[in-house]
Length: 625
Image (cartoon, rainbow, N blue to C red; front, side):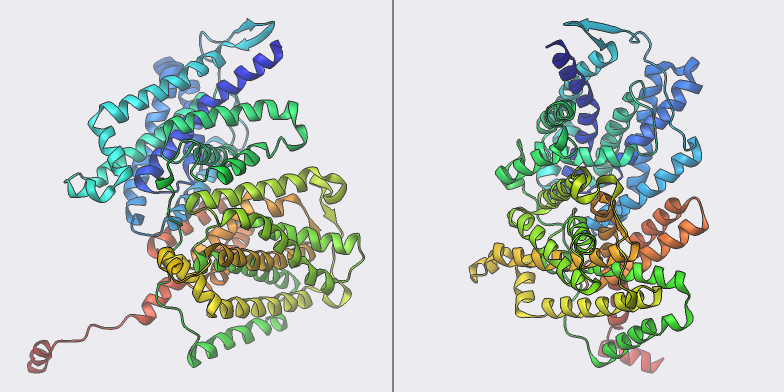
């Protein structure tokens, strides 16, 4: 009994830091509508800055002063980021803001290594709280008891801030109706800056509080941002009490999951989130009318079939790609095949996002299912390469049919997070079902048949698949089914009045997208000769999002261009420098600022831009001149 109580108290202590991060994320999104993927990076920065202040300047500011100053310093940094970068993107689609903050995350990951080194840093214990208190025969750290009190205290202070101050009233008003706040003469720029700084400061304080408990490392950001998103979604977007209750729930699940359900402990939180969203799509404390619109962009201009000039140009590109094996060596052929495979993967996600307005944060689930299906068919069923590839999309169809049936009943961030939950469930199965998947050891020796074994031959196979699937998805998007899908994206109410079955059409889109992603996964298994759970992981899904957004979410084939740019940059930078994330993140941020519609969207604007026609009076003046 004493052990269970101690474990429960440990969960409550962990909930304090999680709540601080999730509260800041919820506040920022509620007001600015920014999906701040860099929130975990600010959490990590708070821990590193607090380490420096408490270790090297301990005589001047003290331990607690160091934690507070670190939070303030990172909050000021967040305000600068908002003013210099995010202000330029408020009118851009929400997912481009996600892309910009993802670029910031990459930069911060390398910057902390550059400044503090790659090794874990162990901070000092909190003065006066180095001992433990015995509770029912178990030793509970005094610092954990402080954190248990701190969580509700911060919740109370935030409630007072938002309900008893003018700033708080404006923040709550902006959360509900930003246009009305602007019409009242409130300077939204500075309101947004203040909200962003407050949210970032809370995240940094949460990271600083972890200093006496855990080693500071440069992998803190990804783990905390996923949990923060889960907490915000379970609690309900914009609800601070919901974030607090969800933080406690998630922390206790982490504390007891390994004891009670060790086989599913890695995915227990995501199972709970999936159940909550299926039963209550707006979260435990959210409101039905707060369900967000899908964060997808409409087309830059009405889509149409390619004209003769465009078809000719596209044909030249395909011919040039087909002739590449004549001049390129085996290494470049392997890289080229990998880029083509990820172009297929990105195009499958682009089909959902551009065509259906459905943002999937867990699209790697179908990619990984296809990879495992192909590997299993080759290694355990004795299939040849082409039959295994032909059957691998079935795994994606089954997964998308199951996950999509639940997902299409949600919208916006809730839909995106449910897809992430399903992807993490599949990843957990692959990681822990060792007898089938090999677990962390993966499935090895998945090589193509002799006719496709050389890098040049496999590149040609990948190119043929890419051309075929891109043409197929374009044809579908320009078919009556594609028009119906886009109508549901642009005007759900009008589409419903026309008798379009939203659930059935979007569900079919999920299955087609999952099949194409699974085929890309099957090709990837043969390219690498092995399959590991990483193929299903969150970073793989994020890479797909980045490729689509870089190419242009409002275009038909932006994912292909995005995959080419992103994978080429990633591979080249990793071979040239130790600071590839820093440079790649900077390039992503610059591209988002310069091309807020993506690369193809920006190119399309240049091509279709027409000079303003002169009025008759203007023309007469020009003639006279």
